[in-house]
Length: 362
Length: 201
Image 1: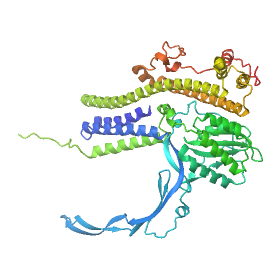
Image 2: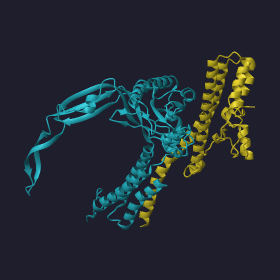
Image 3: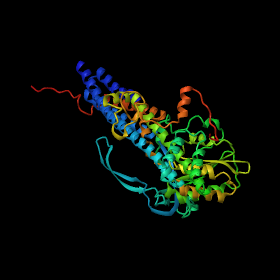
Image 4: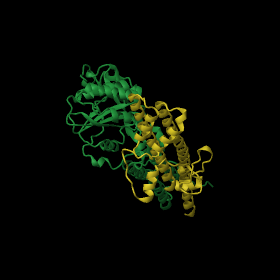
């Protein structure tokens, strides 16, 4: 319906102008404006539909290259100009200039990853010897998690039966999905209430497991701990996170006051039925204060039983995609602006020379 | 003036017609893909069921002599006819194989739970595909395209649905059923839930 309204604006405005200002706004100008803006609207609408399904996942690996190099400055500008030709008003019509540069050299700090990504950490001109803490601290072999965009078909259809509904509101302590920071890092141990002895060891250990299994199993592992006694907490998390990213595998542990696992579930878009059953049956009894033992269990279980389900299995949901409210508002604004500008242009200019009066010679 | 209006109407018709044609092609592809997806999911459900049966029977070492009885037990479990869940199937397996190793027993339990989980997901996926397809052909402008392009189309041959669930006179992808327990059907028909005895019997 919005597409029809937008097209009516794109065609209606120039049509009205042509009817009331026939000489200033010719039929040819009407056709060109209506056609071009309609096509732009249609393209923008389709793009906006795809954009509403855009999401971010993380690819895991390790730092594989650290490069610091410099080259001749690329920031040039014209300088020392001399005019060599003037018109009758003595305004310059042609000038010759030198090419000058902001500085002598440009400096770059790059990181390469086993995921195939390269990230430019810093770039600057004439800053030899500058300290770049993030690059300085990075080391070859360091675990890395790099964001990548993908199409999440679950976002297309909120009515899908695959999505859990009405559970998240029952739990106030559901954490937010862990996101990356510092270009290539993320803390994957998440909790809003549980305190373990060594959170850093958990985050470091999960980063190592992700670095080892990330590429092989196409997985990003996170752990959520809670004091909540009801295992439906995991369903609430599933609803709030919409399963997480497409390659996510989240172990959800309900623990007692000694941080011993009382119930366990996994949240993942992937089917992994055997992994789900095994975690539910085997993980109770683990103690989250025993970081190494818990991490060993997670590593072994993931390695043996995780198999990523392709998001393409639910691509049928994309037919329900709609532009987001923001995308739609932007489309309306752009349609109105482009229609207005194009109309003003054609009213004031005559690009097709169709308004030149023709006189017959006798 | 009339000439201008006719010209404008023609241009508007061409623009709407062109974009409409693009949307029509897109709708045709989406509906065709949805029907292919439904057939594939129906086969996937059968595959999931068959894989589960085979895996558990192999693990439990069910001999040919008891294969039919085993199949009956599995079907009863999947259709929810066992009030005690998988416990009754495990008892049956133990009766057939009294010297079963405890580790193997645990593995069979895991396989049964995983198989049921897998089958449940397949069933949900089938329902979700049906829901999406039906929504797309009953809402505007999909209903208009469906009418013009002749969707939903009839399915014949091996993949023909067993019953005309929506009673529209033709067997389409929307007629693929999900397996429900007799108890569930009865509870929804009578409005009375008789409850579950977790210890079987």
